[in-house]
Length: 187
Image 1: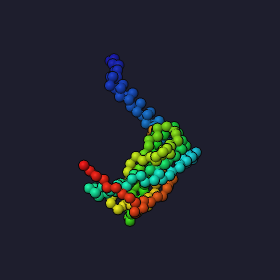
Image 2 (image 1 turned 90 degrees about the horizontal axis):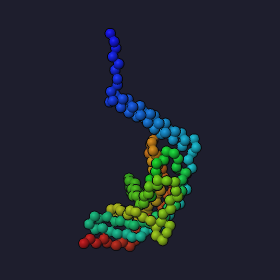
Image 3 (image 1 turned 120 degrees about the vertical axis):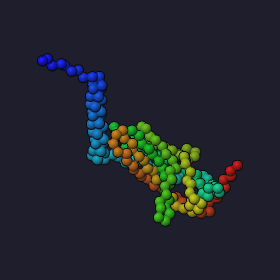
Image 4 (image 1 turned 180 degrees about the horizontal axis):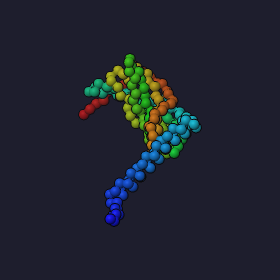
């Protein structure tokens, strides 16, 4: 008897090609992620050069309805982040936080954030007016008379691999208990 030649169907061929393609992509992605870790350990990436300054408190407002205080805090920051870039860095998320301590708790509030998509020196707030994106908000009595620490933190977002967090640079400041406060009026 004669054996019939069986041809593979179109779906079988598509399945085979997609399986091979996905397997090769997974291997390449794994090698990329692992090589990044070894590269960072062997070369010891240079630390960023960060100059952080407190730009002053521009406004302090009391919101009676919400029972909270809001302070507009200026930030001056110059950060050379170019040393963190290599073949597997997609972008950096840089942010400045104000940290305060109350009994049993640590509070962090983001005052400024920036997404860096290419190697550059970030320079904010060194013009006429210090930069601020967000307000420092807390319950009534938590802002005035409290000590705060400004910190620069960043997340390195790779093309593949683990997202990791780092931070550097600190400046302490306090808001006096007798600071002048305006009352927010709602219409």
